[in-house]
Length: 216
Image (tube, rainbow, N blue to C red):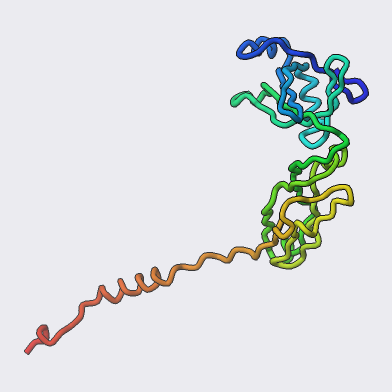
């Protein structure tokens, strides 16, 4: 259950293959790791867990209450059943809200490039996530890039062009292209060899006369 954005988890004593019994009871096994690498074996209501993932994703901190202690943590890894896609296990990573951390944030393109509309250009997204450093509370859910200003073929957005504000530092390489408008592909032309081959066959079909075949 959740109360004031605090999610209650319970300590888990069921381990190994026996956790399948938890899932039948509507509970999902989870682990929470702290900065030292130590882990807590926990369990949480499955419906609540789905709500957590939908609300916080992997880029917003979750307040997890275990007993009388609260922990701020991020979703680190989600394991799903290979057939049903149901969540079978989740790992959380505890963080200090007062210390900067580095994390990957997805890049999302927005808007429409006039070079696509006017010249048939092709949008080529080269980077799908960027590493940033900031306090956990400042981590954006995504980095949105407006490509409506890309109005020429070969126009692009570099990492250095992105401004996320004073509280967020991009630690990925600043000189890389995030997105670029490519020229439209030209229609494929028939290879020269094929054209010559066809003409050659026509000429070869005609007999070549010689002096030895000329009647006396």
